[in-house]
Length: 183
Image 1 (spheres, rainbow, N blue to C red):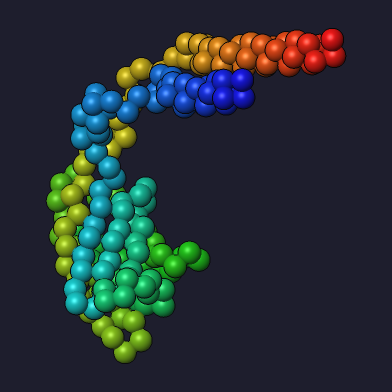
Image 2 (image 1 turned 120 degrees about the vertical axis):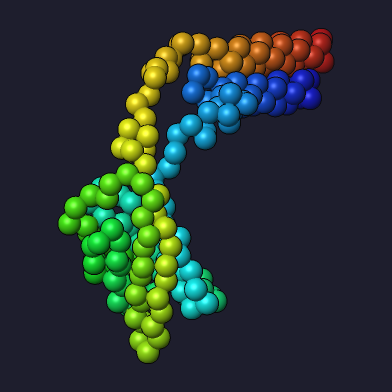
């Protein structure tokens, strides 16, 4: 009987884990839809000394500077960018990243970027490209709001019913055996 009870509990756990509601489908349709929603424009530049990675966010670029050999963050550097005719000094942030605030937004298209890095007695010049997409393409509006069908509790309810029946049967059999031994 204990094996039956253990089997019921395991079945409940597997049944509840296997059920996914709307918005939790990881099927092929979702995987195929991923390329249609582009990420924010990214900038990646590297040399033998440094690696600079950035993301275009709102009024500027959010940058991360690492030592190329060790991948350790470089937090005490002077970072200056030249992009689309703007010369921007990046300011160090508390989390070790840098923020380069731009005086005017970048137009759509591909822009050459040059970064001058000064860290201690090391200096480097990095070059790369930043591809800026249209604002609508960067943040597409959702086409439909997923609805909740209200049946997510059903596996739990069925599992609890199975456990309740198993416990009742177990208790009744135990009581019958106990009465049989007394007689």
